[in-house]
Length: 559
Image 1 (cartoon, rainbow, N blue to C red):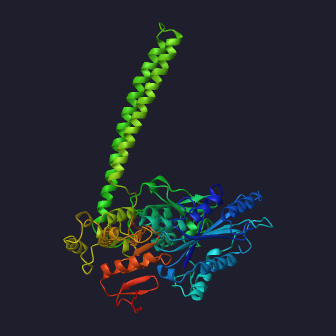
Image 2 (cartoon, rainbow, N blue to C red):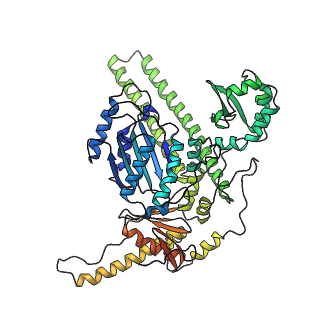
Image 3 (cartoon, one colour):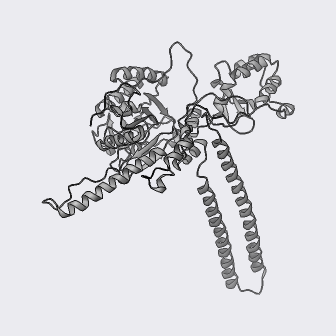
């Protein structure tokens, strides 16, 4: 179990929008397993309780900070079999007690739309009676201790947490979020990897210019910002607080050693650097895929620049042409005021029409370029390749992260010779005569699922033909509807293939295990069939987890 507070600026704080998202009101609860509210006079009326919270927040006009505390509690896939609505509500109450929100209003919901079942909690930070704002102090430590207690209490899988005997890490939530979603190294991580070099440079420096001179070798600089300092990338506006690097790396302690802060001089700014920050991928065994990604990104950037240059040229020509026409009409003294006004309106309309046509053409061309490479980040590229049948991209997504070498030229890692040859495996799979030709270009797992779908549809059609002759007394068919009808799937940033059934259940293929939603009995049946196709007939199950027999000591599946 892990939890995280989602920070929000006061101007973006909107409790109703968050509560509607938690209940998935926009999509009628498609991704919400169940939702509830607590601490409200409105009782179980969810929307009325939302209005009650808004009225309470409006009564406090003193605070200029946000009034909503948004918490996400995420569970392991294995935990889903143990979690019931009653247990989730009990877990939420424990978090409210630890954070000091026990008497506060809140809206909660459990979402099933990702690989990990997770719970959203929106706490009203304004107390309903005293109308004072409550801000939990050092809440991350309190939540971390609670995680371990709840894991023991409910028998959940253990997650790593902050150790009491170690110095707490000064985490940067935004940097971690960027790395999780993009699969690329953040600037914060780049700086921390060079912490030893930075402190060695500080120890050897006799002045600010000496320090700036050393930092220029790795493409960073220290700048004064308000009452503190920041570490900034020399080639962009990306920066992090210097105190995040270390407690001793503050403006006061830097000035105590180097004197009053001084900006780097021109000679330091132009100094040749040995390396610089580049958002390199965090995955190992990425091979040629990263070069293809860079080639696609650079090609799209070049295409956008060409389209922009052509747009500017056409725009300037149209503006100049119709601008001259409008001036001629204004200077023509032979025209009556009525005719001049009519011609000016006509010319202005033509100018606007021409410019709008240019805009529409440019938008269409940009959309076409975007369609050819519909991704911005490395993770998005891997998911796009995987969803288009590239098994190697899927394995890269599933590969574990490892520290990136500081050498700027080390962009590619050679493939592990002991790793399975996915190209060979996929080529052998594509000669399977039982698959439709269009499905052979997909991922092996997806192709197996489509195979199940086709077989189920065939059986359903046969049963319908038989039952047309023998209907029951009500005149209805006895055969059940296919479970895999309207099946959809996607690949997430961790390389998990998520299948969503028409009934709302979810089946998750993690590569070596398959998980399914406990709330939907059909999901368990589909997961069992898929597991037998992917792993073979000998599979075992524990709770909502299925894997190969012999992978772990589980009880044999009984269905």
